[in-house]
Amino acid sequence: MKAKKTGKWVFFVIFALILALTYTAFFGIDSYYGDTRNIYFKGANDIRWGIDIRGGVEAVFSPDIEDAKITDSDMASAKAIIETRLVGNNITDYEVYTDNSTHQIIVRFPWSSDQTDFDPAKEVAKLGQTATLTFCKGTSKDTVLVEGKNIASATYAYEASVGHYVSLKFDAVGKAKFASATASNVGSTISIWMDDQMISSPKVNEAITTGEAMISGDFSAEEAASLANQINAGALPFALTVDDSKMQIISPTLGADALNVMVIAGSCAFALICLLMILRYRLLGVVTSIALLGQVAAMIACISGYITAFDSFTLTIPGIAGIILSIGVGVDANVIAAERIKEEFAKGKTIDGAIAAGYKNSLSAIIDGNVTIVIVSLVLMGAFGSEGILTTLLSPIFALFGTTITGSIYSFGYTLLVGTIFNLILGVLCSRLMVKSISRVKIFRKAAFYGGAKNV
Image (cartoon, rainbow, N blue to C red; front, side, top):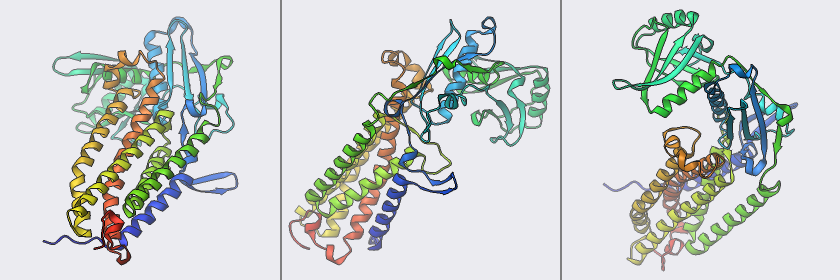
């Protein structure tokens, strides 16, 4: 069966969509009603920059009760709740330290994207409040069954028949509420929420009337311990106060103008790459430049939280390096395809035949290279993320480099992953469709436009 030809209009539709995405991703779409800003699509100005680029806040938290009543477990729980809130706000470039001897928690995190008055007290207030833990019906917070204040304790344990799990003990009020909740939800799910973030959603197998419960699953020892800390954090009997005398503003390590310099340098480098591609590969270079523009715009959209329902990702210097590297991967994919097309012309094939065969013969090499980078990116994100099994297993190695490496390398892995995925979409699929489409236009029905030595 003869393959259906790509319509001439496909190139112009994809080109228009990429231009629209580029404009909105960089500049956003918003409106003002008085002093109120209504955001429809976030732009580059809404990106949350890391401490190394924009600076941030350092604050020291202390429990508001007597030291004699505070245990090391309480401190671990307090650290867990702060980390959970930071991650819940998509802040990955942070540092959290605990000093059990003085019962203090030191936190460093970057400014939010819309922070202009640099008010440290306003920033840290969100982190120091007592956590709200709830048990809810189903996987939403619409129906609260039991509150975290009714949990007496949460500990992690291990049994051969169950594996690693978290054991919960309720007080008298919680015992009655949990018994009623589990009896009426057998076979259904009861989710556990800390603030507005769901941390677990176990299935109820039977009514539990003993005042004790077990959260089991495919947990490692570290994951079970982390979950227990999070639950204990939600049930902390004290709030965290901030020592104002120790609060300070962290200056960006690169200086205030470093970001502007990077943007200018990156723009010049991108323009130079596009120019070289056009000079070398002619019309294929033009298509490559359009695809690369779309790739960059899509990455900016994923970082800024383009759709208002999502928060901005924290972008650090290594994260910018991930963007640059993924652009290089995108160029490489298009170069491979262009060279294969030129080889097909050398064999004497027509325009349509050379384009079809060129993209077909280059696909395996492009896929192999991109899939490898995706795997590396996932490992980096898993290993250098704020929590997870890879983080725990490799923590002795990471300790040699210091805590600050965590958020930075995670940012690198994230941008590299996102860029590689969009390279597969734009650099492989969209580029092929645009080339096949534009080759149907009469004035571009010349082999010279695609690397051939003669007209066809």
